[in-house]
Length: 374
Image 1 (cartoon, one colour):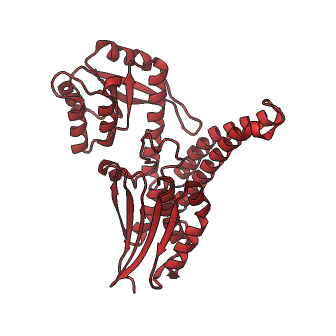
Image 2 (cartoon, one colour; image 1 turned 180 degrees about the horizontal axis):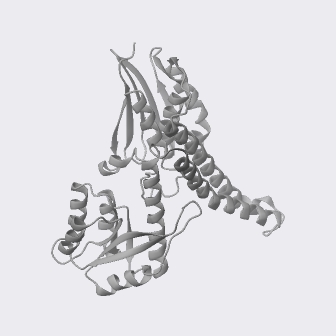
Image 3 (cartoon, helix red, strand yellow; image 1 turned 120 degrees about the horizontal axis):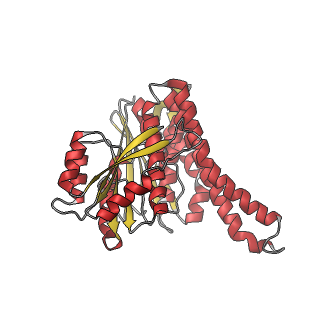
């Protein structure tokens, strides 16, 4: 069994002793893990004491209160960010300081836990963090440890399919047994929820396939001249049903034929991810513009939306594996957190760049630049 090193930083003795007691004999296990995870807990009652511990030994998880004697928790978080320390930080906060906790997550904290919390709530949070740590470490090994790690990666994502499958199966059995009567209208909410789950599973599977193909280096690439305007048009047509559901209008702006030497499937993955995100994270009645231009030796693709937008801090980690922006507006939007990381990996193969211009409440614009095109 591997022990994760966890540091609790809080000036309340009850919180420090409570966390130590709750996690003392607690272990986390998943079917896809080779071994269980336990926890070794250190404690600190001030920010200064926490910094000494952080400097002296590696840590995996930090539960960090903000309101501390001396330097505050956010200052400890700033130090961790400045030093690029590889540790998952979770803010402990009172309900009166939730706004501060949300701000801290934008500054690099993984999540926050309101206090007082129950043992069950703490264990659930730690279990999620442990899974995230495992996934992060596994993806870091994908390029060096070959087939076995890729097999584990598939096992992880397969495990993630179990929960929605169980939910859909449950709804179908309730309908089969006619729990709510004979009328189909009585089951519409179950049907809608099932379709939502199926959509999430399909997206997860597609992202999983794209990711593993790229990471394994086994994908057969067919580089040839492509009409970028034509491919973009096909992608837009594929997402028209989703756009209609969201009442989002999509426009393609391409004044001339733009040719790009590329693999068709790879360009489709890029366009599909950018266009689908622009629709999913848009507002009802919004607009998406797909712009295609050629400037000297550069081909430029931009996808602009009038959606919910992002804070500048949120865009910094957007292209990492399993990253999804957490907010009240995104909690019901399905996604694997792999789409944009796949886009970035593909663009790196073309020595192309991608940038984000986003403003909360006004929308986002993703711009891709391909260089040295004839």
